[in-house]
Length: 260
Image (cartoon, rainbow, N blue to C red; front, side, top):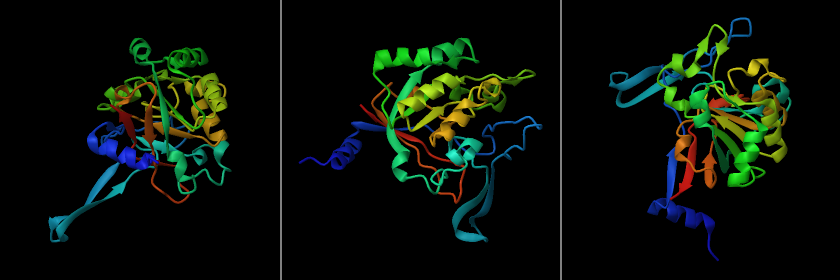
């Protein structure tokens, strides 16, 4: 009888399965969400401080200490991140079952629409059209929205894309998120600074990717990169946050396994 793990190991070694990094570099220049002061406090910028660097503070080694928020850079949103998910005992980064960090991923390509309109919203009709072409979204899978927004990551101004009327970035409608929840998905991911659209504060409910996903004990991934390197279906995503005690989220290295 064949062993699927052995077959996967062989495919990785032979190059028949490629590992694609979906993660942005984490550092002092990493774009972070900017909340209006009337809403709440913001995460401080990422800081990297040297402890020693092959010197008199540590002659044979180099290491650093970090100052960063749980929701900095490419990061995981746990259910306890949002008030609607605050009561789930398995809703923090240290209590979520590890099995839930690995699963098939469906990539909905909205890059052409977003190139024309940065405020583009993914609707139920868009998702149904995608399913008609690529197949049904499976229970227990991840769904991510490809927008190529990650290519703006080198500039916080371009990445946040805000003006006097607020941020302008793509995302899902509340109805789209509810449709995916009803499908039984594990989580939702985006290439923007958060899992919601820039206009999500005015939706019903506000910030539906947060409100509804976490209300249903599901997860979020934000600031993803390189979704243009994934097929619409057939890849597997590995998105394991740091095991922070009572963590509401975590920066993480998101990887995808893609057959060649």
